[in-house]
Image (cartoon, rainbow, N blue to C red; front, top):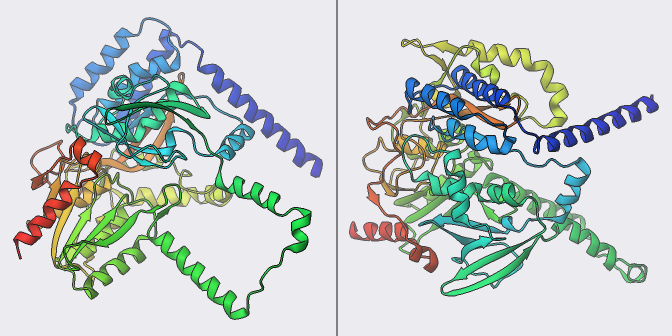
Length: 538
């Protein structure tokens, strides 16, 4: 039995090596004209089959014309990543910001991947960036070089400029609809990937930087994983000679119990508020302004991390106890996340006794949800349990998908059902901060909040559309010949509140767009305006 087990492992190892080699060889293999056209046809068919609201922002005739135009220009063999720049603009032309296509990158064996992981954080990942006025700035320095100031401009990385990357990749993605505010934020989010596509994985990169009028070049090196460093330090510190002198203080039973309780509380808090270990910050933070204790700022970086129910319960209970009069909901740069989370949050922000957050999601057919990536959100260790339950899962999806009075297929979710507002709902003045980085679920809750004329929106037009977004569940494919990874979404999700202006985001009541000078000085003009507005109403 043991012999067969090791034989199976050996076969899997060889299969993995073969798969890696085959994939990497494809990068340098020319696709024939016929193979390219077949991939274009495949993408067109997939869009028509599973992408709801396909012609919301582009007519059927115009989209067909674009596909025909690309097919007519395919006349020579191309490598997959050259073909990528022909076919990805087709996907971007539907103007649904969640849809995405990625170029091919080198694959690595499991052993190589583990070794790279041990080496730690790559050079580009050691900074957070902002692309503003066609320049890329560092807004957070996580590197070992403390001399690099926040607000420093990245002129180039190994002679590749941000402007060149922006120009090269601009047509490969889009916002939701026609607005342009999302574009620089999307570029910032993808910047690390673009450098990887151009330069591959590097342990060090030369950053050409400009701080005010001073230009310098910094060699940024990958630094080792902290866990690995600690292991090595532990080995060194516990030499034989030191082991003899090492004395460990024994904790009493009560001390152990107290330490265990504190750790449990800390772990619970970190989970509920979505602690990000890489950036050493929480996804959700509540602070009180320096005006007085009556104004609070709830900053939510995304709706993807943390145990939101417990966090929001604590937040709004505290707001009630402190008799907070003004709440600033900061959704700037929030790319979205879970519908159930914004459903829960909205229950604290509405004065209506009951509400419905979103409409039932629109899908293309009764079976289109079966195209979703069923195993993508399930740990691999649970595959053996999940696979046998798929028939039940599929049956439930089909039962919950029904035609509406207009003949459209709709899927009813928890957040599309009526819900009572929370007993600790906030009944004071609300300000909502938005910008081009506010997307997806951040726009859905903003759309719904726009129903209340007493809420003041400050900032710039959101990157996501007012009238909904095609998201919810993803369906991933590889184009058959180029193997370009394509991610489509299969649910059109929209708040019950709508605007007549199709294809635009949520507009602020007070437009404030921070400048480069604000970035360099660390100023927050949106918050400053809100403070003045609160003062003026006293």
